[in-house]
Image (cartoon, rainbow over all chains, first blue to last red; front, side, top):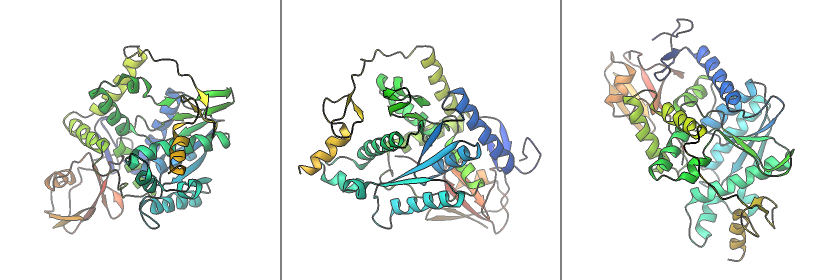
Length: 313
Length: 63
């Protein structure tokens, strides 16, 4: 199989684009495709300061690599969740993120949940009253820390490595249950919320520059670029619903190349056309009495309530 | 023979078939793995050679 651009040996065949490319032309195509998504969805501009949420996995490190190559001002944020103990999953992924940053001279902020708040995510999951699944707590804690760091550091947007497969899997889950509220909010850009002033958003804008790229392509990019990422899956993600839906969508993709892309892009199109308009109640936001982040709750936000329950036993 | 490695599992397949056919033969989804030979990504139409060792990198992640 030959590269369509130069006739050299192709390293990847993207059947949904009917495009086979060699390593060099794939890297060029991938970077340019990301830039086109940034522009199409007006994610951010040349002068914006970005905070990239880095997990040590292929998507986030590939994203940081691409944004840096495109010349954007992008710092990283690694959140140490404490999964797997001192030499387990979190420790290994932190090592990958730090090595990546150091090799490229990039700035990486590290927030260790246990050191900062007193409990790791698995410990927190065990000690909360309802013994919640770590994944639910993980999302809540990560969102809070990302917003805090973005706000304190004056970042214009938080960039995450969500790819097309991530978005299509969430879309499928929400569609099967017609969760119209979630469907209305799913988008390549989540605007900032609760602005104190035009230049100081309290909840930062969140952007997903890889939203049109298949997970297979982000993994291929990481391999071709020689990015040393953590191959292991988070132990809590094994058997997750997201992975189940991704496998289902891949079966569909095998029979019908382009099915995932079409599913997601068609969804964005019908949303733009107003076919999914949902009458949402206007959210009344307050400042959390403890941390100051906007919340719909009258006193403490969900994050602060979580730690308050811990303190009160 | 050709060795195929995926996480902790190892298979042997015949040389002469394509990578895509070999992935299907060992029961994996070609959409969900990427084949790497000698540290380099190879395309799915590549014909496997005697003695090749192919590492299959999992593509899917997420909780």
